[in-house]
Amino acid sequence: MKTKSTGKMMFTALAFLMAGVFILTGCNKKSAKGYGAPQVNALKESKLSMKSFVSGARASNAVYSDSIEYEMAEESADFDNSRSQNAEYERKLIRTGNVTLEVKTVSDAEEKISAWAKSLGGYITNANTWENGAGFTVRVPASRFDDAMAQTGEFGRVTNRSVSSQDVSDNYYDLQSRLQTKYILRDKLTGYLNQAKDIKDLLEIERQLNSVLEDIDSTEGRFKRLSGQIDFSTIYINMQFERGKDEGGIILPDVKNSWNEFVSTVIAFFWGLLKILFYIVIFGIPLIAIAAFLFWLLFGKVGLLVRLFKKLKK
Image (tube, helix red, strand yellow):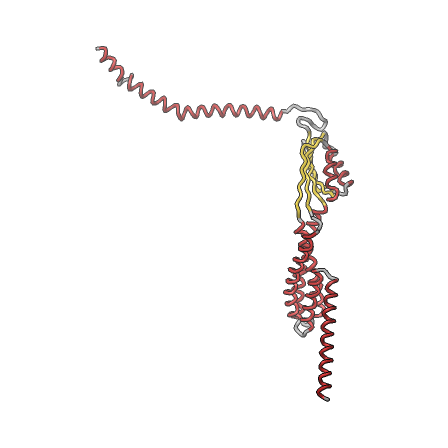
């Protein structure tokens, strides 16, 4: 009888154990379905780290193991995010435009450009005027970039227009993913800091938390700058008068160019004369010396040819 009762008890215990395993497995699968890849990794990371923390290990050991688990979770999250984003995501572009205009006046150009930029939701970041024109750097919302480029022709005759685009999608989503995982680690380290009971553990957790916060500040700064370049496109506008005209539209004599041409002609003449003298010195003097020697040898004191002629006459 004892053997039968003992067998029944073991069978009952085994049945309860198998039922518990099935229930736990079903709960884990169900909870994982409601999360994306980064959240599932973060959830696993939290469970593993808290398990090591509660299991009786020191807080510093829990932090060390958590750092390793965080790196693995970050790599897995980056892979899963890039895989899902490659299927379908919004491209992030930095667009830049360059426009050169011929205008009749630049006296009120800055006022006009400023009002135009504000009407598009943008602003001027740099303005510069000089004797024969003006230049402006304008930032406009990316959604109004095409309209802005088309409207620049209202300020004068367009002589040059160009547009360039830089795809920064990979960099944008990479920074975004890294920020999300760094936020997870920051929150976890903050939780450990509140639970630390030892000064040594407290200092170690604070050191790691400060390092994570510095990384977050740096990454946030890069992400904000990149987002600003994406959200607002840049247009460089260069204004210049028609050649030979001033602010009033009067055609002026091109005195500067005429003077430059005159000076160039004079310099070219004397340079040519100098080259001739140089050739005379280098090549002329030796030739004259050779000719003088031959004259002296044939017709001079030596007079070889003179003597020859005399002999032939005799």
